[in-house]
Image: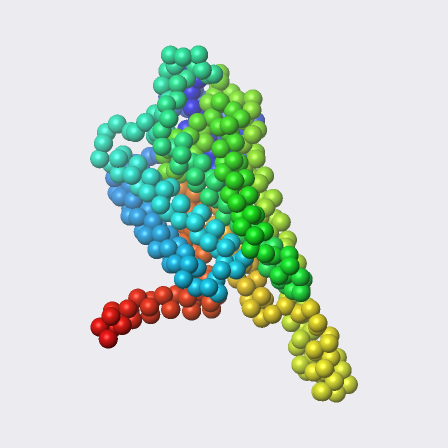
Length: 396
């Protein structure tokens, strides 16, 4: 009978651990015996990580994360709506990033909270829980299994799609700033609102198509709530104890993630190299090192850098560089988790850390904007001043 492999479920952004020849070595001897006999595998989550106290602490953490993600991104969207200066191509990209983060805080994390509470108050796990979503087949479907629709079929692709949207949006923001730094005179002609909105729509469509690709092109995968990561992950349907022949389709996920992040980091390096070169030249010009006299140096400064970027463009590029670094840092645990699974480690407890560090990145962007973006700080200040001044105006 075809069974599931509970400890080899696939996140939306770390699916490389499945299509490897050594994946079956990641399970214990008892698990292999259960797999060979067609029985359900024993849960990996022990009392220390899935006890009542641990689940309670996890729920408190998830609720705090929901509050931080929703409040922070609501502020970001409100500032954009009420501030005309924010309605630029860069502003539209920030809104796209905020909407993707908001979906994680409104759909993905609350569903994990609901599932954890259900596991604490009921004895029977829900139908979408690991190993519970499938039952012996009464139909002729591939693998001999019937898989009724359950919430993870929506929540899993939403989390994967929002992760892909975040990566692609940061990539577009990096490209927009690189044009402003490297070709400041052509920025307005190359980066328009219409082109930006078109690229945003394309990135959303491509990201969610990629997120559901395993379900579209294969019938050998399902989505279920994983007891280790405590999220809805892709899980393969094993046929005769072997991975399906089309399991390589899951390589699309890490290939997309690492390629786009690598290109983004490369573009940031080029932009920062140009900024450093310009800053050094400006310093030499201010000291009069490139001219015979002080007045000539000032004139040379005006003529020597005819295509220099503005100070706001340089600061915005640095802000986006920080965003890229923050996302890369939050994605690194997932990468380490994938490598560990490939070499034979299960790391059930570490999978929770890896997934939720990535989820926590959804509330980091507003913090970075507040520290680095003076326009955003000004918009937030005006927003709260307007809220406090409204009753005073009504009284007067």
